Length: 292
Image (cartoon, rainbow, N blue to C red; front, side):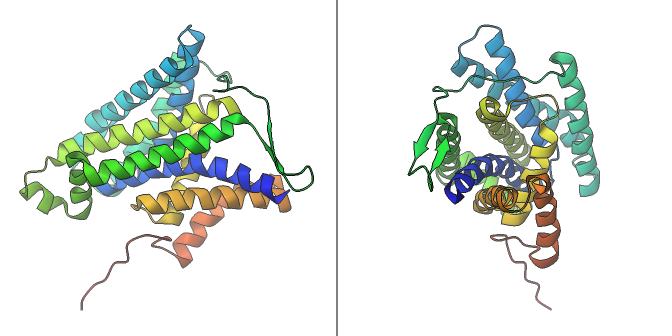
């Protein structure tokens, strides 16, 4: 029984990790918490379903949906965040909340308010792991979620360590003024960060659409849980985002299994409160030091 809970927790945790990574990337580049991150997940799922229903092959539909979400992320940064770049952080956060509401409204106009589902990537016959008593059953789509999420994290690690653009994002996250003096375009870094976080969110939306379905409002809760994972791992830490996402998924799954499924969504909010009170820097967040 516990194996089933652990597999379920790791699956949902992998999705939370992708959403949390989007939060971390934008926060590092701009110190803004993008509360429209969950809507990128929604766009990925809804656009994939729309393209697939229009007759496109599933891989093509997913790639196009990621492209659409990336474009939305770039437009959000260009039209909403960049004009207010000199505003306070609170103002920028409110702008992203407004963008989130706007994107949900546009989704109902572009698509509809119905629940949509993508077909599983490689069949729906369940896979039995271990014995009947102590084993677990999982769908092949779960393996896709775990595998693609791991590959995305590995590619991001390579991107930040080996490419000039990735290193520029890291430089801006450490010291924006110094990065600007070294010739790094902070404006370009912000645009890349929003586009990259949108692509990650859309990827997560396409991955979970065959399991939990998708609709115009699915991004609200996924965004909040991704934010909780980012807070738990340490806001701004990519490794912390992954760790926080997996931890939150396991806590949710085990809590729902051994306590009550009625409180499943409560755990994310409890984690936010507990992390802010007892562990404000998160599990892997930066510790600030001030010399006096």
